[in-house]
Picture 1 (cartoon, rainbow, N blue to C red):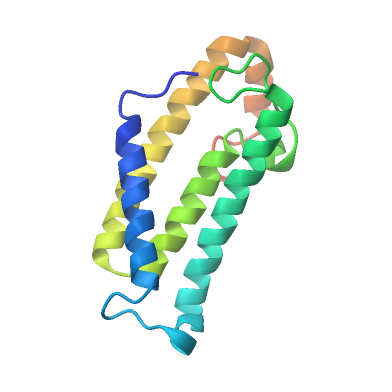
Picture 2 (picture 1 turned 135 degrees about the vertical axis):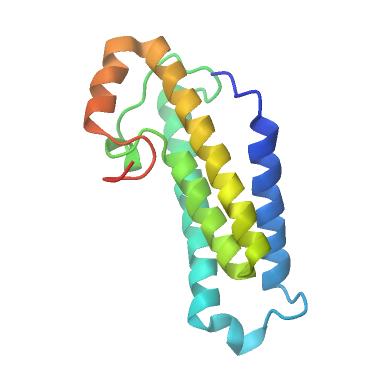
Length: 155
């Protein structure tokens, strides 16, 4: 599976937002530490970051076991984990994790980076879905008819 020409934009925005959120959660001036970190907004951000990472890692394992490749799959994996509801659960994990880091930082810059990262992730997801459709034809079309692209029951 080839990456989009702007793969570096998604990677850069994602890493930037992760770094910004992580720095904010570790005590950059204006961000509380200690008990205040357990306050609902910060706890929710940390929880989303961990949940998103878990979604991504678990689906990496599923795809690696079943397809034995992540780059150019020789088999279409349509089952296991969230694959019965969405075709790109690893990108869903990215979005959940990035939402958590933006929530940890909690300012306009973080949410602006988040919007850019979401746009890049959606573009990459559409591209990879087209490539899977070309590679696996009717089998992919049948799977696409019963699942969502990225977010269960929504999109």
